[in-house]
Amino acid sequence: MLRLLLSGCNGRMGTIVAQYCALMPDVEIAAGCDLLGSDSREFPVFPSPAGIRCSIDVAVDFSSPSALDGLLWFCQERKIPLVLATTGHSERQLAAMEQAADVIPIFHSANLSLGANLLAWLVRQATACLGEEYDVEIIERHHRYKKDAPSGTALLLAKAASAGLAAPLTPVCRGSGHGTPRRREEVGISCVRGGGITGDHTVLLAGTDEVLELSHSALNRTAFASGAIKAARFLAGVTQPGLYCMDDLICRPQ
Ligand SMILES: NC(=O)C1=CN([C@@H]2O[C@H](COP(=O)(O)OP(=O)(O)OC[C@H]3O[C@@H](n4cnc5c(N)ncnc54)[C@H](OP(=O)(O)O)[C@@H]3O)[C@@H](O)[C@H]2O)C=CC1
Ligand SMILES: O=C(O)C1=N[C@H](C(=O)O)C[C@H](O)C1
Image (tube, rainbow, N blue to C red; front, side, top):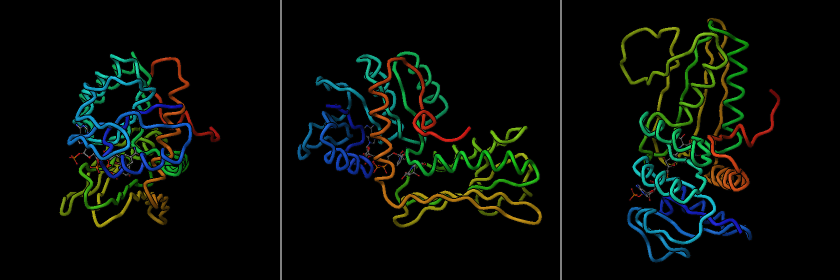
């Protein structure tokens, strides 16, 4: 049995992950964490990891950047691997996560769906083929409740676009009326928030005479939940501390 700690268990993703795990005979949510706790779930819910005493194989976090410090402390103390799916962390937090990966295995991915990670790979191939003459612009669209912008996936795609080129691109968030012409060395990110959009990402490669568009749409949150459980299963078999990501799960041509 794979025993999980689910951080952010009362949220949109936490709810879907718990439902998804309930369908798996060999995966169990041993404990949950959420700010308000809860006594109506099929597992105990704690306001922070500090109070958890039961045995945990892997922690899975879909909560908020504010949960990170407590989670890293708990997982390092108990030597528990961590799947970190939350987005919107600061540079300081990302550095703390990298340090913690010297002690425990951490699987960090801003998007746990197979398709979005394949999109990142395709974007890298596309910029490598098209080169500096094509401007890269990213449009991300999410539901009205999303707190962070730009999305973690948009930043991941910006990095992938940059990796295909000789000179790196700097991510720039587009607002309305920015009033200066685009600079060649930027990758623009435009954020849309509305309704119940689960998560759409489009990468535009805009040349003078043609435009290539590559897109991914998550149709529901199970796309992420299934990736989270694959990542948890993977970490349960990892023996070395380190930073892992979807590249460690996906087989594709180099
Ligand atoms: N990597 C991936 O594939 C995906 C990542 N995400 C990311 O996951 C995160 C959660 O998304 P979503 O479920 O939509 O958000 P929600 O706001 O619906 O859920 C987050 C839950 O975490 C709780 N929470 C907030 N702070 C803490 C804390 N310090 N400790 C424990 N629990 C806390 C929230 O409580 P309260 O509401 O009271 O604040 C809420 O119940 C986001 O960062 C999102 O971007 C989402 C989908 C896919
Ligand atoms: O908050 C969300 O909902 C999502 N967040 C992730 C992100 O910031 O990229 C992944 C997905 O797009 C859904």
